Structure formats: C-alpha cells, structure tokens
Image 1 (cartoon, rainbow, N blue to C red):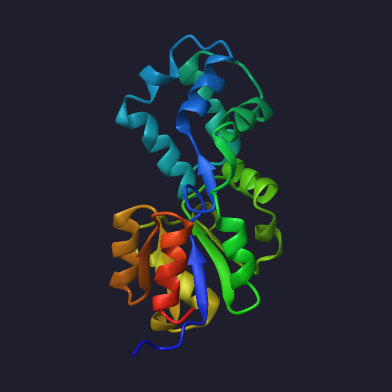
Image 2: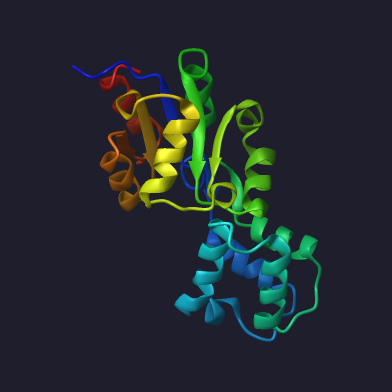
Length: 203
C-alpha cells in the first residue's frame, strides 16, 4: 500500500504550459539577426547558455549581452523576453481542469528548470500558479533537474517525506531523478493518462 500522498508537484513546460521552440526561433528571426536561430541553436554550446541561466549562473541582463553578441543585435531585454515568451502557447489541454479538481484535495506546486522570462509567461498563462505557495524554480535554487539537490530542496520546502510526494514531468530523466530520492514519479503523457495515474496512487 502507498503512503498517503500529500503533495503533487508539476513540471512547467509541456506539462502545465504548452511550448514550441520553433515559435521562439521565428520570433528571433523577426528581430533581424545576422545569424539564423536554427544555425545558432544547432550548436550545443548555445543551449549551454540556457542551461546556465536555468541554474541561476547568469542573470537575464547577462543573457541579453550574450544573445546580442551571438546574433549581432543591439536590442533591450524586453525584446528578448518577448521572443523567449513566444514559444509559450497557453495551458496544456485538460490541465487547468485537472488542477481545479486537485487543489481542494491536496497540496500542489511546481518544480521547473526555467528562466525568469519563461516563468513570467507561466504566471500570465496559468492562473493557478499565482496562488501556489510551493514554486521551486531552478534559477532561484541554483540547480537543475535531474540533479539530486533540486529534489532534496523541494522536499525540504514542502516539509514532507519523499514517499508522500508525486512529481510529474515530461522528461524520463527528470522522473528518474525524482524516483532516486524516493518520490513517486509519473511521466506526463497527457491529462487523461495523468488523472488515471494519480487515481492509482490514491490521489
């Protein structure tokens, strides 16, 4: 028998908030860069900047400096924030309804590898986030999934043992990280499948 579940924690992108990176690339193209975003982000080193930002290793202002250098632009942070947010296209189907059923029954929260620009989009497009007490954001915590530390910090913040927490993510490696510390991990495959998985855990 499972321990009683007292918290359900969600990833943000592609679990609560739909995201399409190609819309970001098109938005960058609209800024008039000297290099194509498809070329730039075809280089793994370009993603290293995103990873660094998610881990809190570079501020948004620092990202602007680097992005302007890479793309040959001289534009302010607001323009880059808008381009980054272009990929966020609203709630994943069925998830707002699922959250409305969950919130009265259990603690809910978010654990996300994210940057301030994407988090602002989440707050704007997923209204429940604005009232959640438990929002564990990689850029604030200084570490990323699937590293063990971010899951430990999440458990500390919740004040719960791992076996009483369910974590939902669309990436298998992040589910493995959650399970490694004793959480229940559910791979996200749509709202209907998730509701069934949660019911099987007694949620």
